[in-house]
Length: 355
Image (cartoon, rainbow, N blue to C red):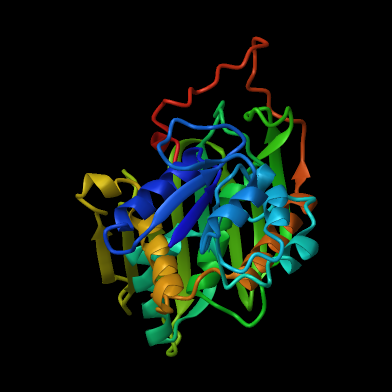
């Protein structure tokens, strides 16, 4: 089975590690396509259309920089294999309807939303469904520090997408999330421009529930927390908190509690997931689960452990991201370059610490 990784930067190397870990169970041939040859032993292609024609990959991984996704997806128009795409699918201003229509021939599509593959997420989703809890409110704080990162970015919509997806995934409704209000903060934090949105705060509606969110690319500490308040069928209020990648990658936490008639706390669930002790899986436990599901479906038609974030889901998320970006009220941009010179974090630095 041939797998073509498009873009072998930070995200592409993570996908490479995940697929190589799975190669003992699936016969794989990995190759990559990039504008420049990397220090890699994988077969290299400089032109995507030539790579598709020569390699005939059953799976393509779109892990180029987000601002390049539109060009890559345009070249994948009519491709009939499985597309595994790094988030977000596109950036505001790209032709979402046209590019999405060109991907309908693909045998499958999955957006890389790895927190769906957290055991903490799966447990809370199962509890909500089993106990018939109704969401009243969800709030989240989702941030990391990408100040002076050498990688280009479209901005904070690339970060907030995780939390938006998780709320809708854990508490599905018949209608998509609707944006009410949004405030954005722009800055020169990125090499992508002097005014790139680095932070967004917003309120939205999901069915009858309210969602309040804060996401930032200039958080001084990686923080990924979601809080939920539910009502059970008898009217009791149930609270839940999910925390991801704290203090290290793939270390996730779930706490669920309520209060009794006397106001005392009643713990309903507490789980701590410490990731993997296998060094080969460091920081990619959840990503490897996603890649394994893709391989299983492509190789043997095996259903994934949960539905993929498919093309229709991705279109809905991208529509919401575009709306948040377009409607965010912004003030004067923050200036982080104070002496006229930017000092970039080098490519060989510990980017995992950035998140």
